[in-house]
Image (tube, rainbow, N blue to C red; front, side):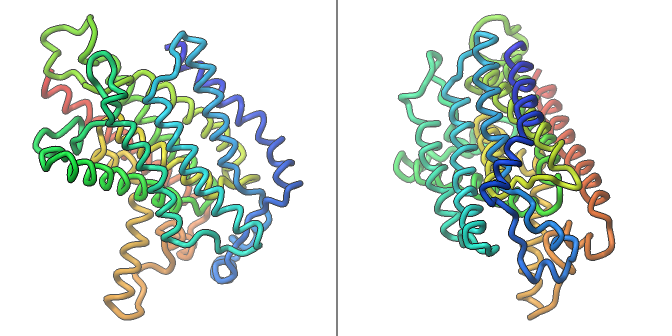
Length: 371
């Protein structure tokens, strides 16, 4: 418990107190937000944000790593392969976002990486993650690997095994499945990041929920001694659940500290480097806690944002030019309807919290049915 609390506290302190230093550096380097001209015309409040320091996601990425390492060693819980895999996804997806942000700032245009190069970059990050997470070389003494070859909901679903189709096709489908999760999660958070504090605040609820899930799995782990025989059917085969709780708690602490400066009116934007890093952490936690399908509910606020974009495009094509929303994603539609930005952000936070709590509740109910 000491490691978990220390990790969260150190990450929180890092981003809360050092962000002003980074803001001054970003201004010196010319890392200012670029706003699309049509967007500024349709919504003047967005034009006012031009020039605000961006790429602030680098701050909570570094803060998470610092908090995770200090917290782990303080409580005599050194990093595990599972924790490093979460860090890999956070840094890797963040790097793709950083390239995108830097291209925008350098060119002073809102066009960075186009769609497919961005997706390819995310897949390049996800594939090594998937290989390491399932490779037998990274089994622990109980034969557990960080990930599994099954699709999961609250735990692995035995009827949905990739390797049932043979090792070659199984590995290809497994890596394709993980890539889909990573790309969908990252891009969904990226789409949500359109209002001050929206993506970061929602991330606190989503990743916080996964920290609780991992900690519960740690208390009900199948390996080792101490678990009552009656609870064996309800135990979890997750590898390194406590370390997953630590790294996700560090990330939540870093997000909370960053949110102090990112809340309306933001003094710093996270940029694509931040939104993609959040998506990477959410995807990694869902995969490693073996709750991949549950992620749709826990991270539902991000699903709503990306889903509204998909619906807008489908409706536009089907109706040959008509719009379902005044502007997508949904939060921009609400802006166009006259909702105040802070009202939208707070209400989306409430929705994010409700969905995350519902996901945790269903996770617990499933355990009760087995206990």
